[in-house]
Image (cartoon, rainbow, N blue to C red; front, top):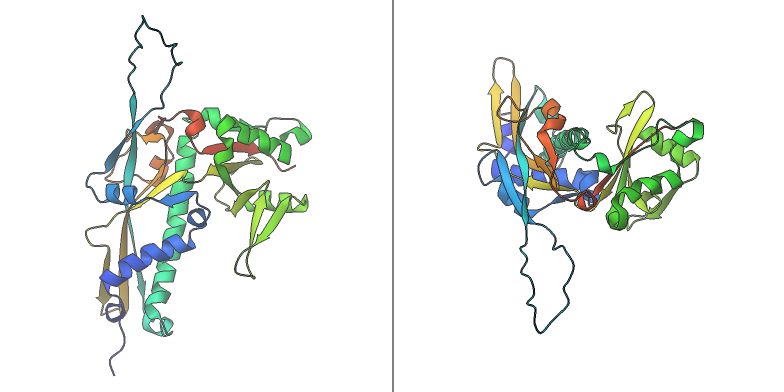
Length: 316
């Protein structure tokens, strides 16, 4: 009786969109509306090239003029700017000797997809936080840092979180979510500041803080007791799913009795309004370290139109 191989289970034309769907479903930033899969970004991610241009028009400015029967109105121009995003090209291969046994469930493709999708959720999370590290210098006007305060003045509180959101001024109402380290989350739980709202699934409740949806992720930086918490607006990051020339392949090492699955991803994950400069990239695609390099980023939107505030604080 012939054994089942990965190639018997994986149909690339079915598997690849399944991976995208599952990754989006499992991604807490997508579910919170912080990362938005934009069809326009999907097009950009498949348009060729590694840096994609995204021109935009600036807001109209200046004062209106008084009407007169002797003086004509002045004619004003609308100005434009240029945002740029980087296409990330990454891949991973897995080899398992007893994969067929592990995938003996009723939906083997679903099992594979859920495992691969969870991996890519983690990789996208790394990319998002490396981007946040890189853009912090360019976004200095949106950073609220109380970590140098004495005692309680350095500790996160409702009052200080509201001061952080005020960095966006009258655009602060666009902030909808907050990402924090699990230690910060525990501190706020201890202070009885986390409020839970039920969902349609009675077994799931959404944690909120000051009305913001909470995402708990230990990728939020901690340095010397200083924690970084992020307040996000909807669509703060745009996501575009591209397509590698060969997204999925299977192989077999017959001598080792090992089945191999290779999955490649091309995608854009871009903080809206902060241009990618591509000045410090050595290879064909940026490393995580290069994404976190400040010189690769320049703010091009007005600071209040960047859907992000960065809050640095202590817990005690």
